[in-house]
Length: 429
Image 1 (cartoon, rainbow, N blue to C red):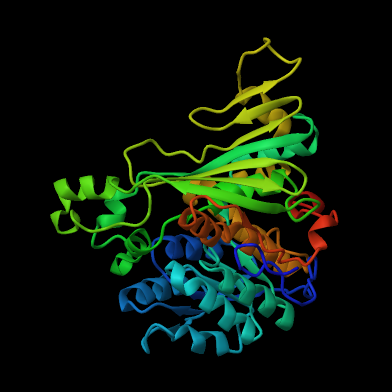
Image 2 (cartoon, helix red, strand yellow):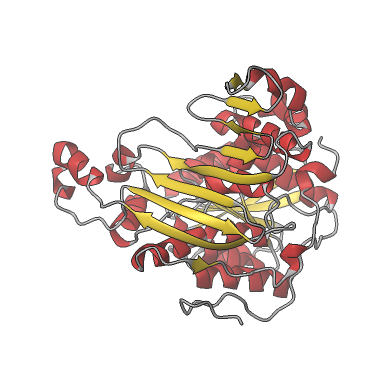
């Protein structure tokens, strides 16, 4: 019963522990691994959060640890211990340091799961940039380590905390759209210049995924907010997906004009990938990935139910049966004040100036707050791997002509039980 028709393992023995909580902490001591494009922003956020101390930092580039060290000391905190000088796996020594409660990683993707595993094996909670894993085996390793060591393992999906996504979640909870049936989401972002730049991604690591793998490598920005709206792992679950990709040509055309050394490179990643997910309760979700073609930024984000629907891109619009002109979209602005999520009301001023419109600060604040209060993080290990495993599942489906691929049940049946979503269960400040 634990093996899908494709031969992949859909269930493993073990005891799921959604909702487990650690004791409260007066202060949260953080060891930070990976001080690149996202890492710097998270360090800035953490230094602004009361009760958070950065006691260790790790990066293989000395200039990055030097920046972080100076920034931490300038904020009034003690000089952190520095790691990275012993190579790519020096994060293991950081994870062994005594005065750390949480290891936070913003490394290239291939190091996400290894850093989280090292953290939990050494008794630390783990927080990680997206995606938390790139293979199904890594997903299972993270779940089993979190359960075995009773440590949190949290993927930091910032888009769950964007203003409109949180307001729409509030609308869903208040029944504005009736029963939800369908959603559309994705990551549609012209990354041609960034992927081909020799300096933006250290060692051009992100380009390697375009060369070697074909599917949806970056699903969580889109699927995270949708999963919250649809009560995924809180009464429903992703059951299977089918996935197809276009051929790859966009990067080659771009490289021909600007980076001729890459013009003839074979890229496996299709320019546009489209996946369709079916849930156990009969909902459908379209998830797109599109980073190799000229286009405006979008995460799609459409939520549809029996009474209406809402969309964020290219402009925020809403239609609710019986409200406004029949069969006509209305601007979402008129609904935002009425359905503004309390978290945004409470934290908007503090989040001003932080990355991605403030949502990066809010996600960091919510995690530190949960650890200090002794309540579960908003996103747990089961959410993290369920959203991230779309990458390997889509890859398998694309490789088998769009064959349906079953989702693993990382919760071992616990998904069917309604359980709290943290952003609605506790005080917000």
